Length: 103
Image (cartoon, rainbow, N blue to C red; front, side, top):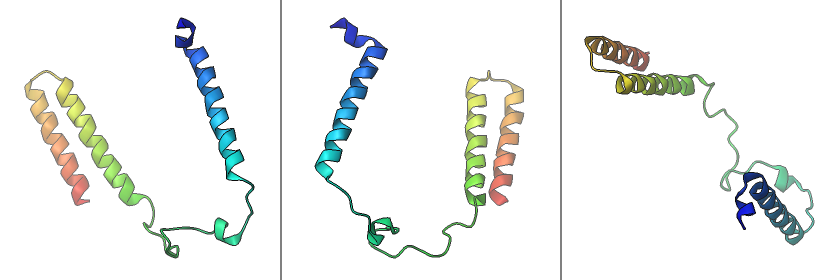
């Protein structure tokens, strides 16, 4: 029974189980028939919006940079030793975040 604990053997067993489940699901589902309804966009029973929801990636990148600066700053502060240079670093970090928020 300890052979089941080896990762390659366990992976092959899980792969076989997943294949059996997938094949049995395909058999139970039956044949599909293409239609215009199946290939159309679905959004909770409503018509799909024609206009773009967010124009571009700029709002996403602003939030991503904000959290990247914040997390890297906390990581630097958490792993550093208490010293006067950390106060300067913390002030610079706060200034960078305020500048990013204000745009």
